[in-house]
Length: 285
Image 1 (cartoon, rainbow, N blue to C red):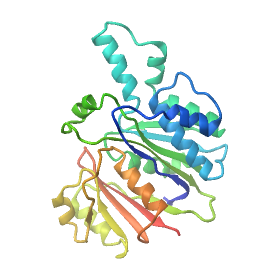
Image 2 (cartoon, rainbow, N blue to C red; image 1 turned 90 degrees about the vertical axis):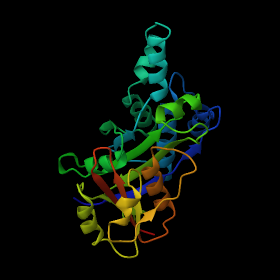
Image 3 (cartoon, one colour; image 1 turned 120 degrees about the vertical axis):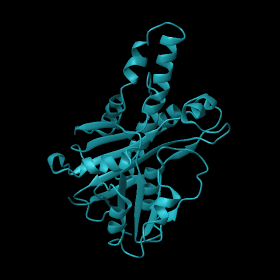
Image 4 (tube, rainbow, N blue to C red; image 1 turned 180 degrees about the vertical axis):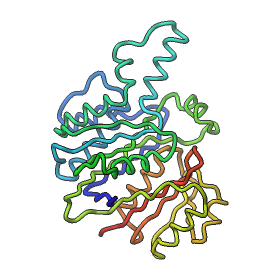
């Protein structure tokens, strides 16, 4: 299992206000085309993917597309459920169609002229780690892949805070973080690798002993202070984020690749299933 070579990266995170920004206008400025009957998740995914693809100077026609989210198409899901439960009406055709996460892939592939396979995944935690594991499978090896983590804003924000169990007034963000992996890239920006899933802190500690001493080791989502303290290495605990986003890991990895502050990064997350997931990022300045 070889590390994935990062040819381009896009880090996009937006703190949410009481009303959404006009992403459709930004897409039109980016492409010169009008977009109709698409939802915010598709807008956000397409916006990030196009910017990442363009920063790479274009992507190969055979590029695979992997789109990761914790709760995709949530705005339309809420609207459809409210229509059925509160208003007693069925979803409109476009509400129903846009609930499918694969619809975003259609627009991305169309604008980047990709005809490779696509996969949309939904995972409560460790979503990016799972996507990297899938991309490294020998049974589904791709020379090139565009992989993104997308989380849309849902208004009104007060209702979304209730769904997430957050305090009133807690800041929320939406994100569209993207990575273009190219096995033939001669000068990659970074190498990304997924370690095997660990069941216990002792297994994690064994892996950390093999990590270079000058790398950053970050304990992220799902890891308690006790998890970080018992690993036998200096493990960094991220400061309290200014806003909630399920794309914390993808954002951290993308930001590190854009501006590496160490030779490498090891990110540790603990998923809802109790397992530990490790992602390594070797900077290639």
